[in-house]
Image (tube, rainbow, N blue to C red; front, side, top):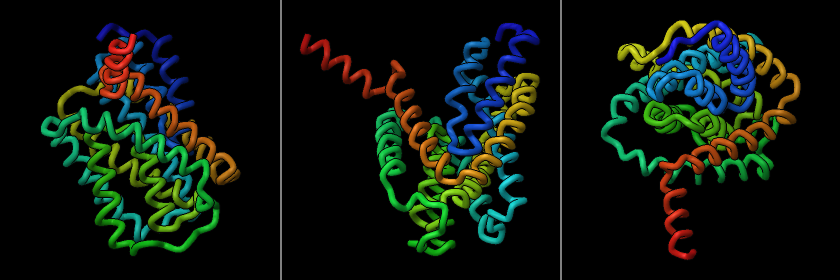
Length: 267
C-alpha cells in the first residue's frame, strides 16, 4: 500500500459520510467506499477488509437510531442477530471452498429481480402486513442463508435482508429497514473479526472512515424514519440496480465474458 496523506484520508472520510447515509436507508454503501479505497492505493484484500470497519460502524449507528425510536423488536431480533453473526463467520471461513463464479452469475440476476420487485410490489408500504412464517422459522432460514452469503461475497446482503423482512415477516418498510441494519451489522462485524485476525485491515484509514460513516448513518436513518417508503423504496431500486450493474461490468464476471465471446463470434 502506498502512503496515504491527510488529504486522501479526508477525501475517503467524505465518501464514507455519503456511503453511511445511503447504507442506512437502502444499503450498498460499499459501491462508493470500496472503489475509493482501491483508488487510494489499497490492494483488493485490504480494501474489502478496511471497508468492513466503516460498514460495521454505519450499521451500528443506524441500528442505534432506529432502536431508540422503538422500531426494533429486540426479543425476536437478538436471535436473528446471533444467527447472522455466526453464519457470516462460517461463510468467511468457507470462502476458499465455494465456487465464486456461481455467485457472480447468480447475484446480478437476483439483484435485478429485487429492483423490479421493489419498484412494482404493493407490499412495500410503511404499515406491517401478514407474516408468511413464524419468527423461529425465519430465524432458522433467512439470517442463516444471507449471513453466510455476506461472509462469502457480500454485495446486496442488505437488500436481501430487506426483502426477507418485508415478504416473509410482513414488516413495514421502515421497520424492515431497522431490523436489516441490526442483522447487517452482525454479519459485517463477524466477517470483520476474521479480516482483522489476518492483519488485512488498515486501521487508521478504517477508523477515519468509520467516524464519518457514523455521522452519515445518523442523518440517513433519521431521514428514513421521517419519509418512510417515499425515500426507502426508490433508493432500494436504485442501489439494487447499481450493484447489479457494477457486478456485470467487472471484467471477470462470467456474464460479461460470455457476452464478449458472443460478440466476437458474431462480428
